[in-house]
Image (cartoon, rainbow, N blue to C red; front, side, top):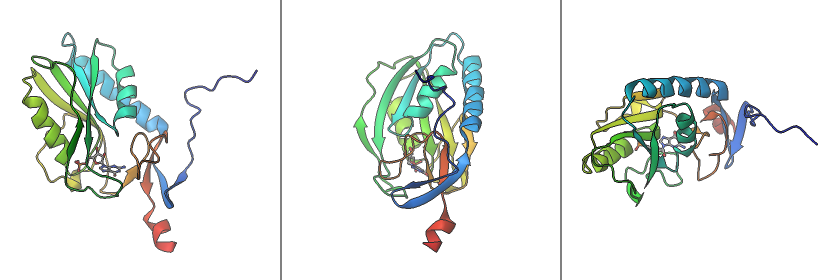
Length: 197
Ligand code: 5GP
């Protein structure tokens, strides 16, 4: 019988092709894992005895959320909010739509919104307003990625995994026209390959 695969034996190529575009490695599985471990430790420290509810923003945040939760050792709960803004394109549509509301009663609770990426800040700003209307005890945002130069809407993000340039990224939950979410690492559109093709 073959040996079971270890959790580190993910598919980790240097470049990938997705919907006829080439993407190159930006953040390795190891870099992502190490940084999420630090974020988990910071949340452990800040939320001791507060039993926070992590609210994952679907679809993009589902992989980050599941890894982040396993790096948090204090009691915590989870719920999801579904939002769409990008459609199938590589630039934000500038519109957000609620697809699924939060199910949990968050009144008086400590909320951590879990985002995959803060780009213009529109989605984070929108979800922050929705959550604040439900009278939680506190709300903070954790995002794996942030594009500081793309920010157009005011949003305070307490925990940031990585700041990245304003480029289109793929993998680790982030898609291009619904594909590529299953990649274990984060890739960036290879502009050179796009020009030469
Ligand atoms: P914002 O509302 O901040 O402009 O964008 C947030 C959402 O747009 C993210 O949750 C994500 O779904 C999508 N998004 C922003 N930048 C990227 C990117 O570089 N790649 C992918 N795949 N999605 C992105």
